[in-house]
Each structure stands twice: as C-alpha cells, then as structure tokens.
Image (cartoon, rainbow, N blue to C red; front, top):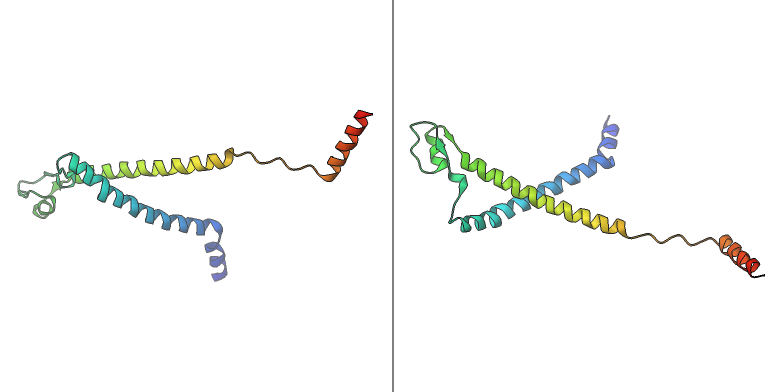
Length: 138
C-alpha cells in the first residue's frame, strides 16, 4: 500500500498540482499586498481617506460604537463596508490575474507564431534532384 501511495504522489499531475498551489498561494500574497498596501491607499487618498471596511449598520439598539470592532462587541451589526472592501479587493485581484494570464498567452502566441524551418532534404532527394535537373538540360 505504501508503494501505491508513493506512485500516486509522484505522478506528474499530483506534483504539478502541488507546485501550482504553492505558487498560487505565494502569488496570492503578492496580489493581496498590492491591493492592501498600494492600490487601496491610493484610492483612500483620492477619496479623502475613505476606508470602506469600517462602515456598518447596527442591527440592535445596543450598538452605539463608531468603529466596527467595538460595534461587533456591543451587538449584531451588518458590516457592509467590509463586504464592499473585500468585493473591491476581489475585483482588483481578478483584474491583475487577467492581465498576467493575458501576458502569458501573448508570449505563447509569439512562440507559436514563429514558423519552424522546413527539414532539409535527405541526400537521396538532393541526388535525385540533381539528376532530374541534368536530364532536363539535355
């Protein structure tokens, strides 16, 4: 059974999938940092320091806090600003992934567009061609 498991785990598809998951997680961290550390501060600067993640609607009269963390401690809240922030992050991440995949597809197309050199004729074909040309002349 151990031998079967080793064969399964070492198949190309499983190893490729594992590498893809690891690279995907690392790429996800990079894109999350891009969104959280670069794009969202720019959006915040353009909108005058607006931070959607702290917007909420209280669902209980007990909630009197002005920030989301304290409001959640006081009672039920509808954290629609956090949902809006995560949705915006998703759209930005999806757009970045679209650009990356588009660039990768263009590189693939460029490689495929290069025509391969036709194979050189064999010695027999070259010899027969020379004989044909000599016979045409005479």
